[in-house]
Length: 83
Image (tube, rainbow, N blue to C red; front, top):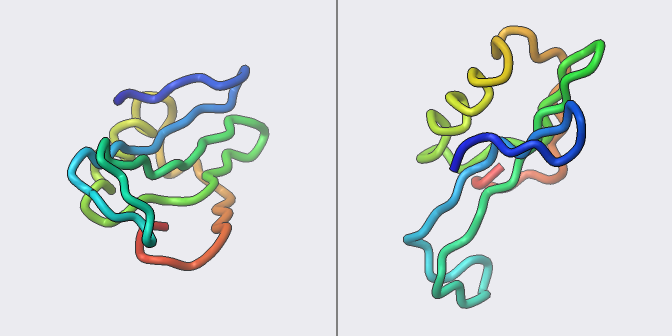
């Protein structure tokens, strides 16, 4: 899925994992999403990252909106392998 504008200058840049069937004990017959967001403001902010297998996909989503080198802030909500 490509980057999706949520509000002006706020984008979902995450990934969909169609293959996962168990996510932290929850049955996920349709897969799951790894949600992260890009905020384009005076300082570009990335909220969360994604599971390593989907990193390149998210980087491409970010590149479709801005140069990843412009990211100044990284907000990590909690520490798990899918962040």
